[in-house]
Image (tube, rainbow over all chains, first blue to last red; front, side):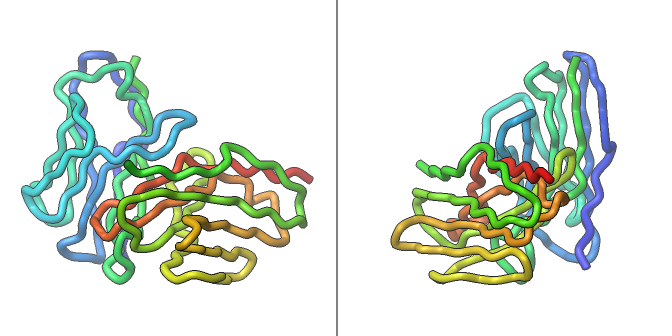
Length: 113
Length: 109
């Protein structure tokens, strides 16, 4: 079965510091992968998605970037965090059998101070 | 643009039935999804409708009317653990479903 790992689970970072969040998946190959952000009391915002190694599409212009160095690894980064980057970051993959069905990882809760 | 509407919050009593509505206007339609998200946790997939009608899965059922751009999630025999946010999402035939903002359901004794 497909499994999604994210770390760290929680993170407190000062404004202006860099960020690296990692997502790895197991039990599947060549998955479509996604990064979402959920701010407190708000809906899911799609940040990036990837259909393969080195292929990244950005949905929202911002100071975040994503990379996919390996088939089952998806990384979200920032060079300088803003207060508005606080939120719940979720990595997801698309089901192989039911297109557009999303399976989410456990998430990383980021607080920028 | 893409627009999905669902109520922000609902309350219900343990043991009762609750219906959470979702209306959508999207460019392209390839199915409607419902997800459950408990506080502090990630969303989990509940149901998928691509054809009109009712899909039943235990205590949960989901209905779709494509002509009306309307869906609902029906929860029967409510339990306290059903207190969560319920997200409606529309697949548009691309890689990217569109999510609603979610309905926070509070179940009280």
